Every structure is written in structure tokens, then in C-alpha cells.
Image (cartoon, rainbow, N blue to C red):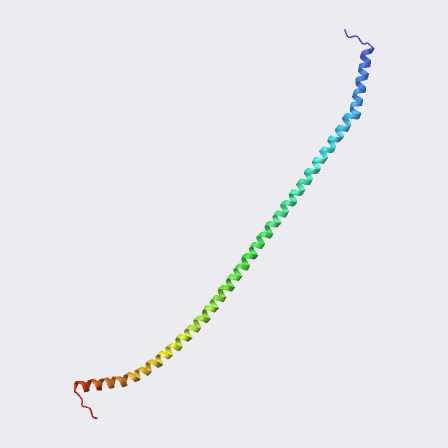
Length: 143
């Protein structure tokens, strides 16, 4: 059988004092620090989530702004290309008109030269024919 003596009572009292002291000066501060740490971690998680949402929102805004800038650049490039093409077409038309005018002028000069040569040719052909007839003796010189 178990003897209940004064030593057991003292050990029990000392154990209870030890538990009380450990709870008061060690366990409660430790639990308070752990609770503060957990609440800090929860706060950091919330802050991280909010920062991530903000970053995603900013990234979407950036993508939209970049797409709009690309669209504006493409439109500006198309307008510049169209203006350049129209300018080249106008210059080509001006050059074409000038060339047609020069060709018409050259054609008129050539026609005038041909008319002059035709009148000379008819007189020259008469002279050649007369000279040939004289050489062949078909016609006598009236002089």
C-alpha cells in the first residue's frame, strides 16, 4: 500500500507552485508572443494579398496603355504612309503631265520639221528627176 506522509504533500505543493510560476512567467508571455507573431503573419498575408491585387491592377492598366500606344503608333504610321503615297502620286502625275507636254511639243516640232522636209523633198525630187533625165539623155538642157 501507498504511504501518505508529509513529503508527498510538500512535493505536491512544490509541483503546484512550479506549475503556477511556469504558467505566470513563462507560458503566458510565450503564448502572448506567439499570438502577436500569428497576428503579424496574418497582417502580412493580408498586406501581401492587397499588394498583389494592386500589382495585378497596375499590370492590366499598363497592358491597356501599351495596347493603346501601339494602336496610336500604328494609326500614325498608316497616316504617314498614306500621306507619302499621295505625295508620290501627285509628284508622279506632275512629272507625267510635264513629260506629256514635252512629248506633244516634240511631236509638233517633228511634224513641222516633216512638213518642211516634205516641201523640200518635192522640189528636190523634181531636181533629181530632171538631173537623171539629163544624164540619160532623155531631156535636153534648155540653157
